[in-house]
Image (tube, rainbow, N blue to C red; front, top):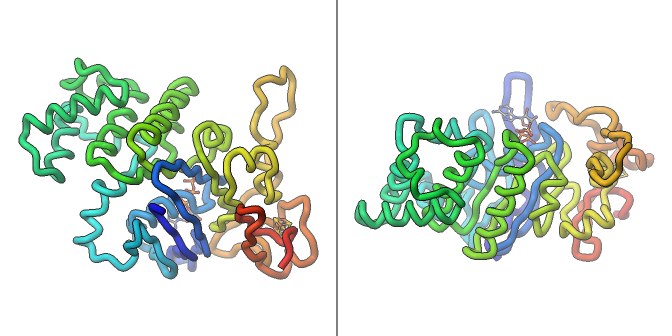
Length: 316
Ligand code: ATP
Ligand code: SF4
């Protein structure tokens, strides 16, 4: 097993009060496995991604739980130890490459710099590796001397992915990596992620609000609602037979391209304010299946046929 997250709690201590952004989240991830994390805005997806790098910004804090990468608990590491893990073992790819790339530096040189900062290689060796990486992610070697603004959004994201894989990490956390890109480029980037998994054995955590996109590439999917992981299933099982009512509603909201006329369904209501989430099950105000107990008590997380589900429909 590559990663084991156990009972993770991440809170933000704001002037308005405590935001319980991630609560009681547990899951495991293997080498060469892609796990999607899906949920509406504010469900805690980005906070979870940052927590795995132990990078939760102030006023946030990991208040409970463990994050073990090949057995080593990242929550217990010093800043010096964490710096070795970040980039080298776990890398991150964000939504907007322009904020992460230096606009005044040629893209090839930026990849070379990343490699030289972590690896004991000569400049020439690093340059050779950077050229190979560009090819791996589908960018012609001729673009090595281009500046970021000379590339399309999709190409810039490919450069970010090349930088992320340049140090051979075991895990890449990609937070909404294709949200700003058109559908065709989105599919190409998903293909690139599949290739990285299959050829390099990289594990990927793909954070997105787009369940259809996640179903394309993920081996398994974790569904988040208001800071909770409410379901964790293989992609096939999740699409065929969702266990949690919230997952079912998310699936209903995916447009079906084969139908000419269809009503676009969205889940009625909106996600709760995490300063003061609803009592009992946090989804109960919007849940078509809510029962008496859902108003009063937090549902337990149960294992059902090897899948995880947090919902009273599956008993105590
Ligand atoms: P989105 O899809 O909109 O990025 P998300 O699912 O990634 O949302 P998070 O960004 O993790 O959700 O936010 C989870 C909760 O934590 C939200 O209620 C948000 O307001 C709160 N939050 C996030 N960052 C901070 C911060 N720096 N300070 C205070 N609260 C924060
Ligand atoms: Fe719906 Fe109750 Fe399950 Fe929550 S616990 S998802 S309210 S049925």
